[in-house]
Length: 166
Image (cartoon, rainbow, N blue to C red; front, side, top):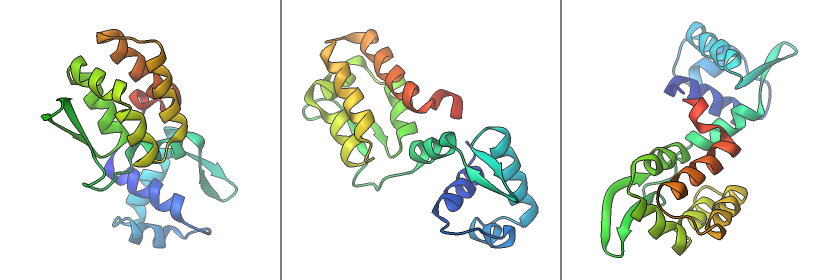
């Protein structure tokens, strides 16, 4: 998702009432034509839908907001391979977390998963209790290596369809 699209989607989600295109454009630092173009693209991609004379956010749009919203630097997830063994990977969004899981060592994944780090971050930083529980359920299968990585990615994709949002 493009940065401009995310700004439009996030601003629309925070609006408490119907918003004029000129006001929306000003809030997202685009001109009205550019804003309308982003709205049309978001609609085409299923993040917005036409509602009466305006647009509303779809479930897919709400999911995208959760996937791309950043947490603070202090709340970001820092990946380790073990105790006192930091990696250079840090995630501030669920999308970044997902991308790092795709490439980090399986030792790091196993280290964090079986300590409960992933589920705690998902629940506390991202306030996603449902995905936190799903991540916890992955532990029950006692998977290791690439099977564990695949199962985690499937859990994120089944809830949010992250791979299709990019």
